[in-house]
Structures are given as structure tokens and as C-alpha cells.
Picture 1 (cartoon, rainbow, N blue to C red):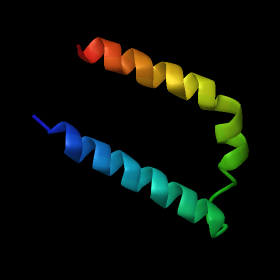
Picture 2 (picture 1 turned 90 degrees about the vertical axis):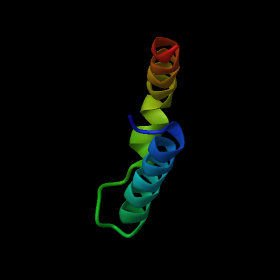
Picture 3 (picture 1 turned 60 degrees about the horizontal axis):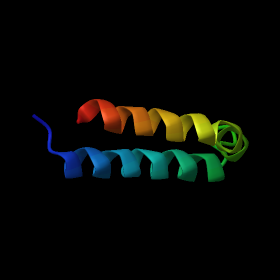
Picture 4 (picture 1 turned 60 degrees about the vertical axis):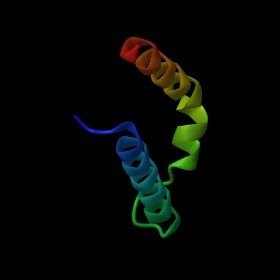
Length: 53
């Protein structure tokens, strides 16, 4: 079983890397995509937290 702090750290590292690559121009801009879909992201995170309990 993977420990929660490990998973959280990996998620933050991956998100940071994606935004860095986007800022460097190696990936398409993520900010407009994130600005449009942030409510859905919050809902998915909330449902995942409920299902874990």
C-alpha cells in the first residue's frame, strides 16, 4: 500500500513539472484550461476523498 504523503508529494511534483513545461513553451498553455475546468477538478477531488472514507 502506498502511503498518503508519498502520493501527495508525487502529485505536487507532477503538477509543478507540467506548469513549468507550459511556462517554458514545451507544452500548450495550461492556465486557460485550468481556469475553465477548476470547478470540475474540485468536485472530483471531493468525491475521491469521500469514497476513500
